Amino acid sequence: QLLAFGRIPDMSTTQRRLAYAAATVATTGAASTLAYREVDRQRRPLQGCSAVSLDAALPTLQASGVAVVGEVVDQHLLDRIKATAVYESMPTFYQRPSGGAMSRRRGPPAPQQPMDLWPTSAKGRYHRREESFNDEDLKVFEQLEQKIWPLVEAFFQEGNKAIDSQGGQDAKKRLKMDQIFRSELQVLNAVPGSFNQAWHKDNQSRGLTIIVPLVDFTTENGPTQVLPGSHLGGAMGGVWPLVTQSGGAAVVEAPVGAIAAYDSRTFHRGLGNQTSLGRPAVILCYDMKATPPPGCGPYENLANSYLAGALNLAATGWGLGATSIGK
Image (cartoon, rainbow, N blue to C red; front, side, top):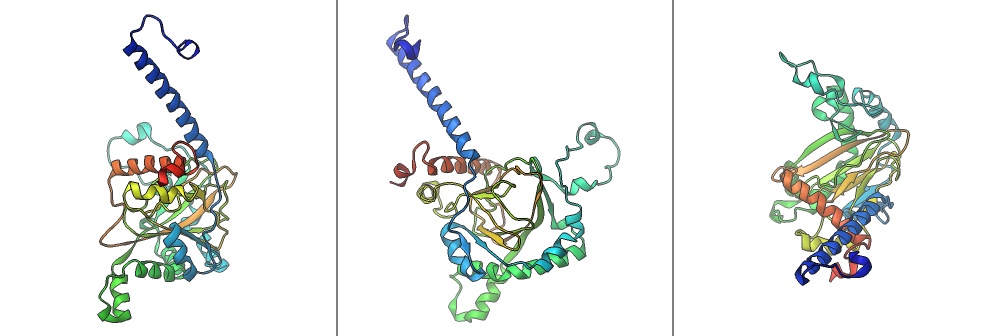
């Protein structure tokens, strides 16, 4: 009746205004929810962020916060990774957690089960960290690290130009490399039917995350989705125009042998796997010892998740729109 006749009987003017306002808020809220869900389902491929070499990746990382470099990891090393005990223990389908009564048992702790080594970040997204790797496996992954190290070194050298130039290039390099540490090494598998992760950053401060695909990354098999430009701008007001100009979230497609690298401050998430096969990968993260990840608490992580969703909504032309935000 409110919308059909434009007037509600037996109401004062104030009551009618409140009723109209409530109806407007409800309608706008419903439309925003539908728009958010539509945008959230989109899987637009990342464009313009490919590099022909590790050296060429640095300018792309600076500008967009993400870069894909082909032919970095040879087939022999890929085969060795797939022969590790870690890879062979990887879950290949979703397995329900064994909680409930067993988790409340009395007495000494139950023996650790294989699935305990593979916690999830979302349903069907299994992670195993280097703390549980054996020594032989670690040697293989350290060979992988050697392949990507030139990019790690160049990234941090470029980002730390305040070192006294009197020390010379060698002293400069030693000092900066001593300040860097590998904050994470893990094997991840997004199994068929896995769910989307929440949007997040790996670190509030500058760092580098490198993903090594062990199968081709496609838009359907649970790839990483990023918000290009979200690593820049600092405060929220500065990041809005940068992200909206990029056109919104984009999916990182990368073949086996390539790497995908992104600035740790970049908003990203792993998408659900819509195929019948798993999507395994190796993930390595590097940060400064002075600014270890994540650099924020759970409430700020939650705020980041909502902010990334709002940025994506605006960047795709829904809601406020990119033009008005950029002004």
